[in-house]
Length: 116
Image (cartoon, rainbow, N blue to C red; front, side, top):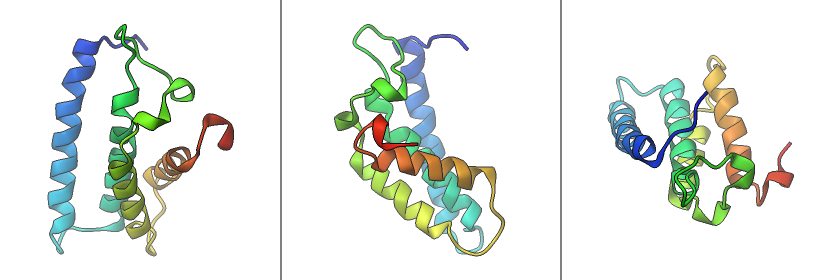
């Protein structure tokens, strides 16, 4: 795995926004909304919530443990939690449920030391 520069990281944000827009369209349709779609949306929101804290002023990626959590987008965290609740309906448990659960635990923790 290499280090992303700010230039390549800036290209990820529009792609993530478009992915979130598309999953929101799927979820808005009663014929296509499923718990699996909600959990995917939750995971996307949790990851996107950390975008403002993921790159240093030097353009290097910042690992989760060293990110300034005050920069995390609380609105995206709230959306992720809402989608995770909606995904908690009876049905198959997917790897995305597990990943979103872990991301939710980190998103709600005050610091890295508050997670296991």
